[in-house]
Length: 304
Ligand SMILES: NC(=O)c1ccc[n+]([C@@H]2O[C@H](COP(=O)([O-])OP(=O)(O)OC[C@H]3O[C@@H](n4cnc5c(N)ncnc54)[C@H](OP(=O)(O)O)[C@@H]3O)[C@@H](O)[C@H]2O)c1
Figure 1: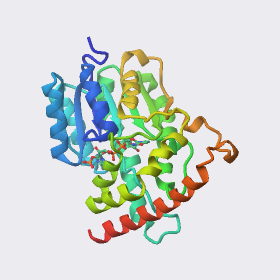
Figure 2 (figure 1 turned 180 degrees about the horizontal axis):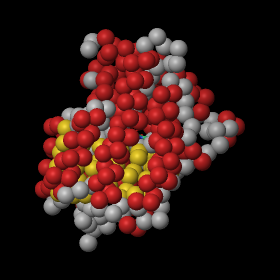
Figure 3 (figure 1 turned 30 degrees about the vertical axis):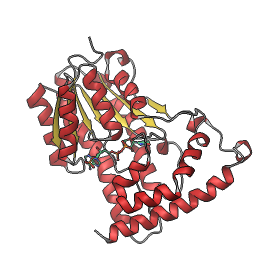
Figure 4 (figure 1 turned 120 degrees about the horizontal axis):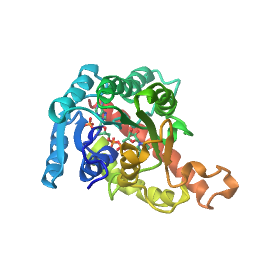
């Protein structure tokens, strides 16, 4: 018997990356899963593969920044499976490149907050009555190490992830009388594909992908070992294992917590003297990478 047998779960951002990993593991552990994201075809593929493997999954096209879509996503779980036990708020805008004094930051800030913060709150708003009806539930908010410590150009993303950690604590207290548990997972760097350059291909296209391979792959490979104490790549399954625990009854006494799953990244003291001799060169290359990303994004934005 699976660890989530009989549970009904919604996973947002389930079409790829960490959300896909969580949805697949939930289904393998016996949960009926509603998979939500904006792009229908990829969602359908993931759902069909889960079903082919003997699981139960329904894809729902939903933009979590649109309140009507969020309400519909919850309704689908109720109509198809009979309720909601688990909500994983994973969908997010994962990239914010604007400086605080950038003339054009406001639109990007609004889009990010509407998805990363309001989308999460609205999902909880609509799911809670159904969890109460079923006598309890588990809400899992996917935050980030950026909610704890961060870097330049990431202020809105970091603020959105910090909001999830703070909101998780407050909602855990508010919802505890109903036996609804609310926890966070804060991933460190998670490699979404065996080849991380796929991330660049997906977001910026073929030309950018070729340029990436030429310029930055070596940097990323070396940085991988430098920026976190555990010398292994974090993968979506590392987050999914934690999510399965939090979704299951094994975590019945656990609420208001933030589970940092980061290979030790935030445990390390950022004292330059402790760093690898290659750190200075990597820092220089990182500056170059940021400048290149900004340029590629500018080109992608201006071409529509
Ligand atoms: N990967 C990492 O290293 C890392 C580290 C720390 C934290 N995280 C957090 O982990 C979560 C997943 O990250 P990821 O790297 O797996 O991201 P990803 O590969 O960019 O996938 C994001 C998922 O969310 C969906 N999505 C984005 N905007 C949406 C919206 N408005 N409405 C509905 N779905 C939306 C995407 O599908 P559509 O585009 O089709 O909608 C996709 O399924 C995020 O919360 C991220 O902040 C990731």
